[in-house]
Amino acid sequence: MNQYDYEYSSPAPLATTVNSTMKRVYLKMTLGLIVTAFTALWAATSPAYINFFVGHPWIMIALIVAELGFVIAISAGINKLSSGMATLLFYLFAIINGLMLFTVFIAYSPAVIIKTFFITAGTFGAMTIYGYLTSNDLSKFGTYLIMALFGLIIASVVNIFMKSSSLDWIISIVGVLIFIGLTAWDTQQIKTMAMTADGDAANKLATIGALSLYLDFINLFLYLLRIFGRRD
Image (cartoon, rainbow, N blue to C red; front, side, top):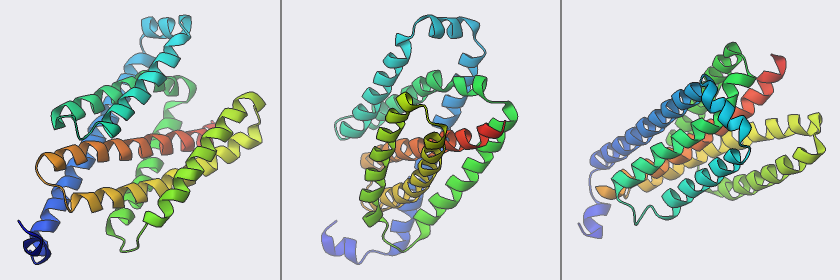
């Protein structure tokens, strides 16, 4: 297909391709969330795992390093990986994340977790729909959101030592706002890339897009949980 064929092609096939890719993105993201949830639930109800986790403090560092490794491998190596390998790495990442997040089921009551999940799902759904449908260019906000995210990480590290409840409250609110914005921005970015992706490229985009939205959802959920968990 030459550039003229592309420029004058019917918008219907393009819309169908984009919709198909986005459906795969959301399906993989949802399956990733389910894998994480069941892994975390298993870990939270396994005395053997809990005892091992408590008795070996290094396991948390190992899991964090493994998570970063998987994110880098998927994000930076997506062009070199086969679509099947990229998908496998994504689900392995979801498992490792579940092994870290099992403490959620211990620290918070089921009522708070369920309430926060539905609030997260509603907020995420609204923002991803906005990012998909809006004609406004959200790319200009991306740099500011990434900069704000780095600032949030630095503030979180500082507060580990300060242990300020006020700063923790501010961090939680700002975290929610950042990931609300990132959800819309990532959605529009994925949609834009889907317009020119086909075949194996579309399969890889579905994986990298699922990873981005998965991280947005998880982080939004955790920051909201810190807010609503205070009332538990």
